[in-house]
Length: 285
Image (cartoon, rainbow, N blue to C red):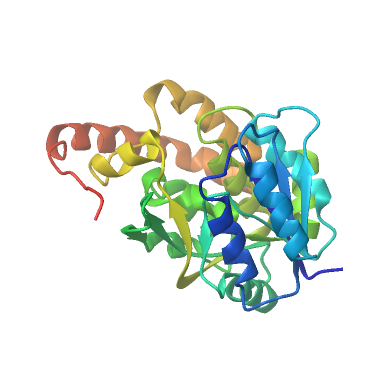
């Protein structure tokens, strides 16, 4: 049994798949296995994955029997793990070669269920767009404090990336028995928020994870004012409800007490940005 199972869910990922897999192979920690879960891709993803399987026995390729939406695909792959730790990696993510070591050390040294690092956003051509340092503020020895910090951290500062952190598998498997993604905007953030409320999280100050901004939605995220609220008004109510649904009992109480302040802060923030910051642009470097 490997120390960690790495799950790579992919659909039509031929463009960057080799970069993600190479960053796994180049890890300084070698006690891993990688499962590439292909959601019935129509490009050359299958051929690329099978070539890697021939090169490295630690890599396995699985093709789904039917097409799954993104949330279903993630939940389906949890059952593939048979290791103490599990992590998802997107087909265009890039890990620094000590990403696994850094995160696993945090889990071994702290009583928490999730570990991650700071994030670098990179462009489609691998240039650095920005460094997301505020993610590390989520770390706390208190699960409730981590939950509140995650709740109040603006969405555009990269908190959704924590879904790609390393989980204690016993915690993750228990969590998904009681909670699963609903197909709404921000489902990944709701999932992480709930997990942190049950098991806590630690985020290293190291920048060992790179998230590629390769689609129009992500590009718009960095060409609008940096502090612009990113929860669409039309999605705000289901996002709030799903966030609440994901939480532990104690966190639900704290959430209810903080909800009026959160709502006021959100709408003041929205109006402030609309009036003052609409001119402030951030572009690719």
